[in-house]
Length: 127
Ligand SMILES: [Zn+2]
Image (cartoon, rainbow, N blue to C red):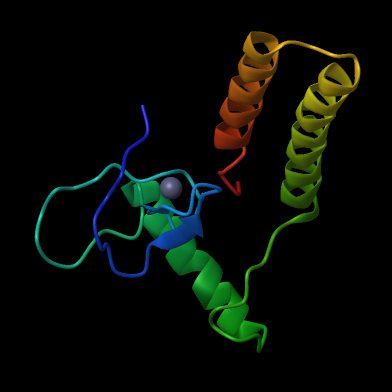
């Protein structure tokens, strides 16, 4: 189910094709979607303590290296993993295009589009 949050400060904002605004907050370390806390006050930045800890350690390491504090540093393995997942997403999108070219009917295209959306959701994490 899609979780819609209100005006969560700093949240990722994406405008859907329908024009409605959809905001979802993501863990600042792993990129997984954060549950809506429902609380008033400062929204959480990390999904769990290990993410908070690793973000702190990476920040310290980045500072020692002289890079800006907000630099995003991925290891070669993390980048390769991200690229693999983007490739999965492209394949799912191409499946929809191929089905449309082959004259698939609306229910079939709907099924493929939902599959694509599910794949994309699984790829939101960065690490
Ligand atoms: Zn996390």
